[in-house]
Amino acid sequence: MKAAFIQETGEPDVIQYENLPNPSPSRGQLLIEVEAVSVNPIDTYIRSGKIPMEKPLPFILGCDFAGKVIQCGEGNSQFKLGDRVWGSNQGLLGRQGTFAEQIVIDEQWAYPTPDSVSSEDIASISLVGITAHLGLFAEAQLQPGQTLFVPGGSGGVGSMVVQMAKIAGAHVITTAGNSAKAEACRTIGADEVILYREQCLENELKKLAPEGVSVLWETLR
Image (cartoon, rainbow, N blue to C red; front, side, top):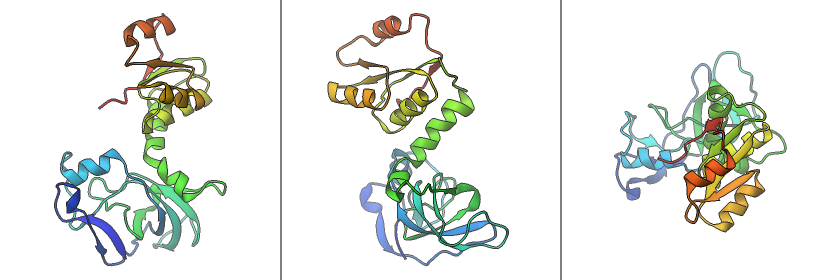
């Protein structure tokens, strides 16, 4: 199978795109024929060595994927051959990544893809969507009527936070660098957008949320 992998960390030119042996699922694993992937900042940090992490070599890059099940390992499985699935959290902590024609993943990392959603669409939001959802509801336990502030509402995680928080009934405040990005934020649900290059963030937040915000989601690195 073709795969994008590294033998060492470094600049983008360390990435090789060549043939590797096809993987085989063990008990509790799925063999997936990959139909779509996406690139996240974490993938570049691992490739460059900016985030040191033990990994087998050659190491396939990539966190997100969408595809279909072509083989199930031994053991009971909620999936069957041909099922469309998506997932993330691969290419981390020693797990091989997703930038390959076929991947093996633990069944716990796979989720059913809705019939109405394409593999390309769901792969493009896997990691950012999971990150936003866990933070909003598992950690912050966001409630309807609360006020949330998330800087960078047009970014990957930021745009997911804006949409999910709005659907959950929160009042959403975000920031944008220009009017076009501000309009994009409003289109996906932001109630208030601060143009941080033109306006004083502190002053605007005090005007928009004089009693403070219920949840602050920090997206800046």
